[in-house]
Every structure is written in structure tokens, then in C-alpha cells.
Length: 150
Image (cartoon, rainbow, N blue to C red; front, side):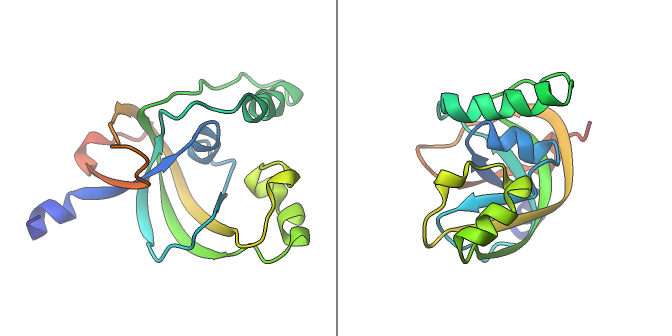
């Protein structure tokens, strides 16, 4: 890829729903992952086509219902946000996972040794953009001109 093309692209992070929506809404600054990442900077948040788990959708719906807020749609196969990935660090222990649950929303039974928190800042929603990831790839690239902040 030419240098000019590289400057016009942004990495795309695939995230299963409803976690992608929570990130794009700036309600989930910590993404729970099984691996560390050295990647930093601006990334696009892609709501993957992977079928969401019913129990996770229930958590999402209840979050908004309990606050008497309209429930945002759970889109799939689209880029729905942008954020700056600022850190990746080991969760450490169950107590850390439990204490920070308000920032990641994962059920406590998701905890296991070896997890990482990927931390996001400067989160923005974008007008949804259809996007196709190949297989179970975590990272892709998109032309940043396609992303319009809403």
C-alpha cells in the first residue's frame, strides 16, 4: 500500500454485538479480549455479523430499560463508531474484573485468567457504513473518508 493510501485508511476492529454498540455509544471504555495488542490510535468499530448471544442482548436491553432510555438499534455488518485505542493491559484478577464491570459490562462469569482490557477514549458514533470482514479476522482497514461522525 502506498504511503498516501496508508494515511487515508483507519484500522477496523471487529467487535461482536451488543459490545460494539456499547463502545460506539461511549458506554464501554474497556473491551475485554483474550489477547494483548500493541495497536494504538484511532480505530473504527465494526459491529460484526456474528450472531449475538441472547443473554448479552438481554443485558444491553435491560441497561437502557432500567434507565428509561430508548434502546439503540443493534446493527450488524457495519462500522458504527470510531475511538482511540489508548492502552491494553492484563485484567489481573477477578476483583479487578468485578470492580471495573461498570466500564466493560461483561457478566462476572466471563472472567478467566489471561484476559486483557483494551481501553478506548475519544469515542464517536459514525453514520453506519456497510463493511465486510473476511472470516474471523479481528482487524481490517477502511478509507477514513467513508466515516461521517453523527
